[in-house]
Image (cartoon, rainbow, N blue to C red):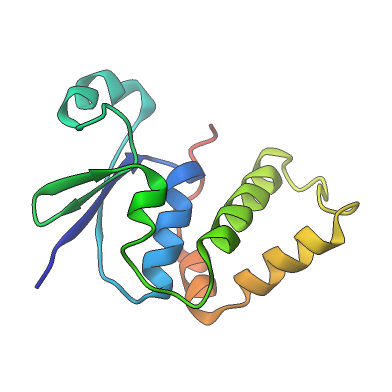
Length: 131
């Protein structure tokens, strides 16, 4: 069985769309998370010295878009990127109803968040690290 390990900071941002894609595809994966202050220690271990990185049976694959091609989903990569961006804006605005003037983005976020697999992840995901 293939072993997937997502390497990323403690927090959401770029790693979140990857997590959502794997949850949607029902692909089991582990996470190796680290604090931003630890980054200088981990950085030399990655092929492009960037994260997120997906480790597939020991092989490191970089770049978010390349990683998002692994799981197959009914929700598109574009949907996940928009959801992640809109969700991040909501987190950073601390509930200030940032989507009030953008009802279509709000509807997109609601549609994706209503997916049972996404909703299950959102209910248990760790709080954002506050980037």
